[in-house]
Image (cartoon, rainbow, N blue to C red; front, side, top):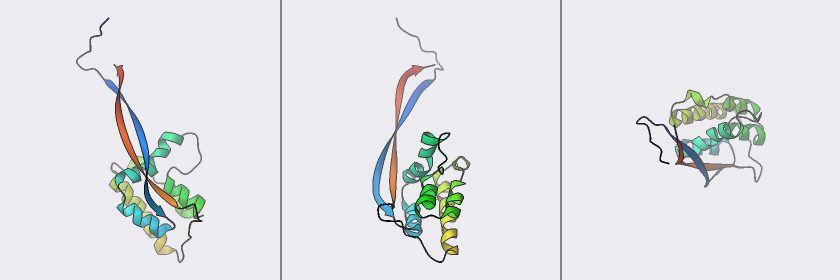
Length: 140
């Protein structure tokens, strides 16, 4: 039996993400800021968007890796709350989201007299997200 496809058919696709370590690490806020300024957008995407896909209704953790690290590793709850309050849906481009992260961290560094160093083994590791979009056999 053959199927006839309508002229305005909708083809379904799926997406898979491959995570790749960049080799970049941050031991403190200054290093975190410098890397946020220079890493590819795919790194910012990974650290801000993967929580949506994994935990959106299940976890009370901060909604992005930067907020989690600031709160849990650096023990800076105020900064963690500011980073967690970023609604990634408000930013149509990763560049704008990156700029918001930079602004928040720069403000924190300007108002803080000393920096906390991450304990050995708890550094922030930057990860890149590589996305693959694949067709499915489903058509509507």
